[in-house]
Amino acid sequence: MNLNQKTPRRAFFRKSLYDTMAISAGISLVATLLPSFTAEAMEVAFMDAPTAATDKEFRMKVFGPATLSLQTSQIAVSKCTQKNAREFAGFELEEAKSVTAVLKDLATPMPAMDDKAKGTLEKIKMAKKGAEFDKIFIQAQYENHVFLRDLAANYLTHAAGKTDPAESQGRHLATLAHATFSEHVMITKRILGELGA
Image (cartoon, rainbow, N blue to C red; front, side):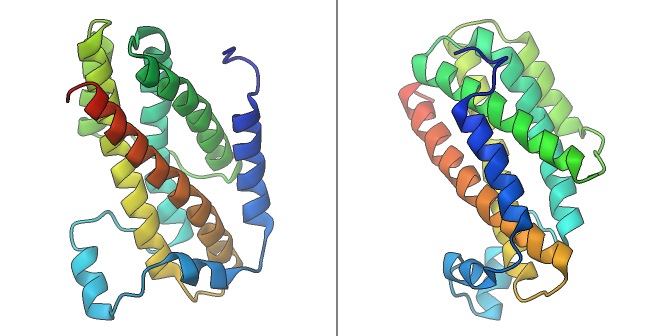
């Protein structure tokens, strides 16, 4: 796969993000995607989950993990040895390029990398090519996508019913992103099993 060219998946993902943000209708779609929680159950479900109350806060909290995914995937495309880990690294690199480009286009402030992310990046840089590298990379991607999935779900719950245009666009972006984040949680979990992690 030539990662310097736009792949159909990357082009589709980027176009989908822009199209989704442009749609002003479809609020009912969010309601069908979210489980029906009582207010009390929602508090318990999201007690330890990452939170985002606004579109801007959601985008800012996505930016850091997306940047980490971009940087670690750039390393992983040449260091992963297991077939599915290497394939995932290529797809993740293209996805992270698209997500960070969209966030920049939306003038999203980029937060500084926190200590945990710096530690993860350093660990991946220092790991030697081979099975151990694959495990470290895929484990980091799994944790990153669990965070992003839970963040998107939390934001969708808290933003439901808001009529502000920015929040409406934010919900559309989060709805699309939540599906991808959830898919990547399942894929990385499966690959970890293949790696014996």
